[in-house]
Length: 105
Image (tube, rainbow, N blue to C red; front, side):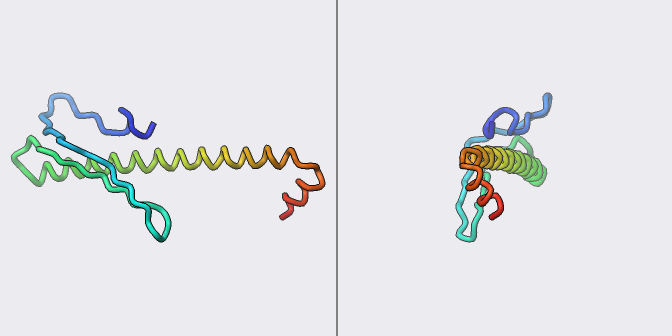
């Protein structure tokens, strides 16, 4: 599943963590094709060293973005394979003279 427990990092036990007030994913369709995905969050880090909090947060965001990218790529491959199987099944229903002309281009 794209949004599930296996998609986001699990906090380490015994480490003080801040609070995430809000988070979200913004997907934008690009005119040149493809899309841009932004992961945003409003956090209250529980660290007095702001650069360390920024570093830790950046790591979590990059991890989440990478997992989301891999899940989407896997889903696209699955959909492509299912579509090709459906096309093959439809071509298999054509009379043999027609299906050979489609196969040869």
